[in-house]
Length: 266
Image (cartoon, rainbow, N blue to C red):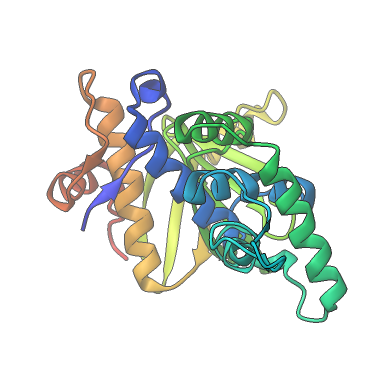
């Protein structure tokens, strides 16, 4: 199993090919609701990738007989662009043909405004706009907090640590740096995260008695394995001497698990 890491320290040394691949990875997250964008932003982003994928937008041209033809890389490509680059959650099943036509018109207009832009320029614009989100590059895991009031959340794993986001809005709830993580891994049919409590100036005696906090999340077993390996890989990468490696294999991840990420007695 290959674990892909996104290390912010490597941004300045990214190659054009890496940026191109990263743009499509983020697009996959956007389409599947794992990256927050507004409808207006979604139109702009879809248009940028349309320019990357198909080049300049070409309007229908008149033939010698006065007939109009639509080049394959313009108007006829709009349904494909919406399917591949527009968030699924914004494609309302109840929307009318008029709504669909309006959406295609907005994308076409924005796409046409990018005439002459190269692939490299478009990818740079695309990533610059999206890097503003604090959890850009994070791998998101849908989970349910196992507590008195079970609620669905996102676990966002980055090179800084793990954060908890609201499921519907993807708003920040809390986060834990890797220094605060005591241990983690599968616990029966759930994922257990044990962290040091954040400093609290009040109730010092209570703080001494309960220095750690256990948080349990319910998710599919395969995702538990993926999450455990990813956390271990990030911790391993942080402990290494400066490296340009962007992925770690299962063997190195597992060795890290033995050191820090494996819960005992569960």
